[in-house]
Image 1 (cartoon, protein in one colour):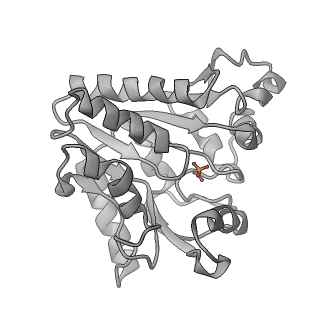
Image 2: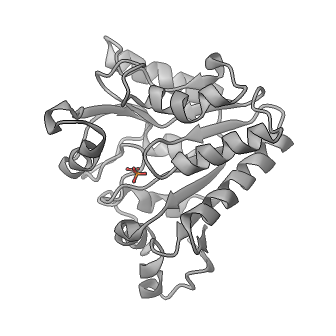
Amino acid sequence: MVKIRTFETAQLATVYVAAIIEALITAHEHPVLGLATGSTPVQLYRQLVEFHHQGLHFSHVTTVNLDEYVGLSADHPQSYRRFMYDHLFSHIDISPEQTFVPNGQAVDLAAECARYDKILEAHPIDLQILGIGHNGHIGFNEPDQALQTKTHVVRLAEDTIVANTRFFSRLEDVPTQAITMGIQSILQAKAIILMAFGSDKAAAVRRALSGEVSTSVPASFLQMHPQVTFVLDAEAAVEMKMLGRDPIYSALEP
Ligand code: PGA
């Protein structure tokens, strides 16, 4: 079942998600968070850092990230390992050994994917945080005729590369490949929160929830998960009405 929660602003939506994470990590002895990068969760991480300053601890938490660019070193300013360090890990009491991000510089990428799947098996995810691409991708699972279930190397879609140029000085510098958790690995999380903010995400959100599960919209597979919440701001929710859904609070039966 997909639950939809819509908030007037992205900031309110973010506090809602941060509060869910706080409840989870205070209730569990060894919680595992699946984390995402991109612009959508930046505010969320800022909020969690704020909670940490107010006394929330992360020393018992394990994190597993969705994806990483191939070819960027861990300390490259645009690598996802570096993103997580800059936005979250360096500001909270989590030890680096408890934070997992695929190694995009592995010489043997197939072996790295297998290693990451073992990590996921050893650390079942309690809550997976997701963004959504304009093309409906989750992680770097791009629209295709078939989706891969486990961690794999992916060629990024043209519009993903173009969307990512904003973080690089030149188009040629944007990596064209990434390692990503597969769709099945994402769906194995006990609970999933997809965050989408801004009018440019409205169509992707509608297509993800329009009823059809299709490999051309990887996020549509989330409809098959028993515990998914789409957390939207008002702009990202504008096309919900086209689906006949109450944009503020609604639950879609599978
Ligand atoms: P964004 O990316 O948060 O930077 O919009 C989301 C995604 O592509 O998954």
